Image 1 (cartoon, rainbow over the protein chains, first blue to last red):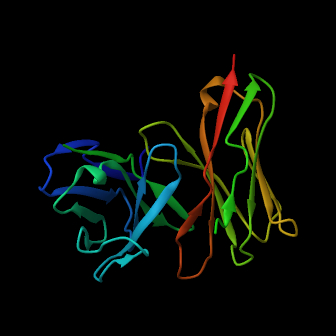
Image 2 (image 1 turned 90 degrees about the vertical axis):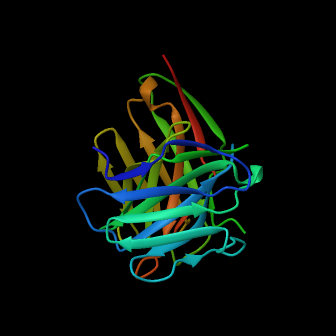
Image 3 (image 1 turned 45 degrees about the horizontal axis):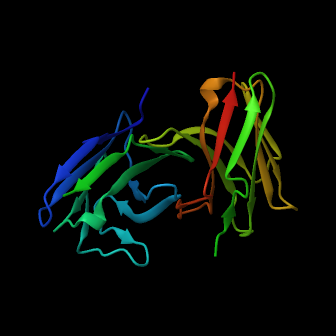
Length: 113
Length: 113
């Protein structure tokens, strides 16, 4: 069964609005979660590392004020895309570390119109 | 600089035969390797992993081989089934406190009935 759950699977929002994506670890506590983005026909690109109770660590080139990450509990991390633009349309995937293995959520398709 | 490379963007195999997916890496600090399978519009699914202290790990139809001196690993699927058709990503981790995955670009495997 699923180890990491992501919600929503699909979301459409208007340009200029904000949208939140949730990532939950099921049946285990995840002190570390990761957020990725994937453009069509490209590999997964790590955006940030989300640490429970502290600030996220962003990869170079990722705007932390645009992609807000909150890891308020040991089972939930959220990614909020603020003031979304059409170029933010993408497939966003979260993952959580369990033991030595990283498990991924189902992914969330964001379309900004 | 791509630290994990999957040089074959696609591979086509007949059902029942062996599928061999290859992956090369450049960073000798990587000490844990994982293979993920991904269908379109879904998150990656963990398949199998191997620690750098081993040279082989087997799980059912899936076997991963690691050649540290060559900085090369491969995933063998035998026998291949049509349901195995997907994109396969090789990923690597530098262990310890840093669990950021570095992904290859993926190989599209097509298993023909």
